[in-house]
Image (cartoon, one colour):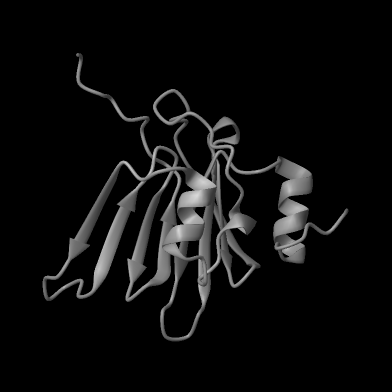
Amino acid sequence: MEYIAGLSADQSRTVDELGYPDHFFISFDPVSSDRVERWTYFSRGKAVDFDNGRLWGEEPIEDNAAEYPPTDLRPQDFNATLSEAEATRLLGEPLYTQEVQDSLLPENTIIVYAKAILLYREGKLIGVDTQVRPPSLPAS
């Protein structure tokens, strides 16, 4: 097995065995910087969970590949220090941005791209989700 830059030993082993995930969700704790990930493999019918890079568990899932085509993004491209400008360079121009000021999610910004949804709190990345439907644009 070859270690992949930006991935842990468990994650590198998973990529070696299963390939890169069809989709992934990453959550960063803004206080502790803990990183929790779920990698989804629709074709294999399973999701693999990691806690700070360590394999945490697996569970069966339904194959939703027809609804959510596989992403070409990689989990190692995202870290808690990824700025909004860097995200735009990686993902292209955002389709939609929403500042959230309510009491449940103070100082949060949701940014929707064609390939991912990113959540920032006070300028720090706290969430990445690549399981997004391709946008449907209104007919002209």
